[in-house]
Image (cartoon, rainbow, N blue to C red; front, side, top):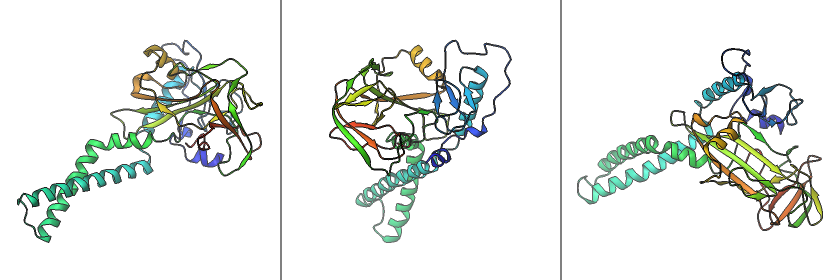
Length: 315
């Protein structure tokens, strides 16, 4: 699982090379930022062995030189769209172009502007479909790419979820259902400001000058200590199973948004950041499922009437 997760990443951090310190300007950010594992993209508050991949090479996001170098690496990586999504966008463009082309030919034939002969219809139809496909791809590929990527959080370049990650093929060891009763201080969801027992946030990044499609640059889960039906779940030991939803009007102002992103090595000035969020509200009725494998894997928290959650990293 760990090897698959690392091999499937959008951004290969092995291309990152730490620049030497020095030069004009401040060496450090004015506020504390996180550390980014340069092998798997895990975000951490402290250095040491990465809890995900056990490597010990960290990118200090506090350091401006390191942050700027990472920025350059990621900018280059965005010029190579994800092949799977790229072909799906082309397929969508072809489908829409075919509908437009056939509609155009049918309209022309009914209007008597095209001879109703097999050869004429095939020739005009092929040309109309080709033109429709090219036009649709040119005008709509970014929208198609955004729509496809926004369906689920996959391969974020930065992530922090409770570890170890559950085996998606493993069964359920035990379960509990009931209201989520906080046994510690409640959290505040970053984007909406809602009080919650647990939250998941995700950020989708796009830039008009970059190769399409947009990319997921962050996935992060946090939770306070809580219990369900007498079974305790420790702080930051819950994997949310609800789908994240777009936050159209975040409570953050621009400075707060800039700081939130900068703490994670992202820069508001680089492009468009779409914010997504999901929460477990205090006293919300939910179901907690502890997976069979691996040992110590954190439980999934899902709506009591909803499906078991998706893989927390892959989406």
